[in-house]
Length: 129
Image 1 (cartoon, helix red, strand yellow):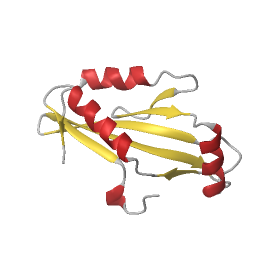
Image 2: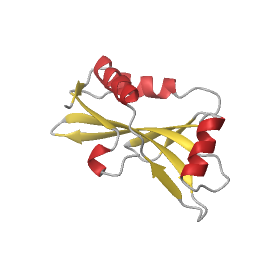
Image 3: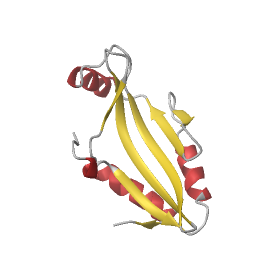
């Protein structure tokens, strides 16, 4: 689990033009049964995924969740900076607590970081180091 904000699993890239190919790839990859594409705001889109039963059980027990299915979330946030587009991809688990409030759990996954970096570059972005 990540506790330091600087270790949050965020991948970032800069695009010279509107990152439409990335937007299309992100939306089309959120298509498995149970996946839900959610527009949070003008700049934030999430793919909400139901975890496998063993992962869901682990998250509920480990993070004292309510008896409500946890969700795995891949999030894309797009912003503007000096005329360029800056895109951040992040991921986390969301576990509803017994209080009813969701708790975000950040667990860094190197393989997922690499996959996100490859996606950002393949769709025209320049990855931030």
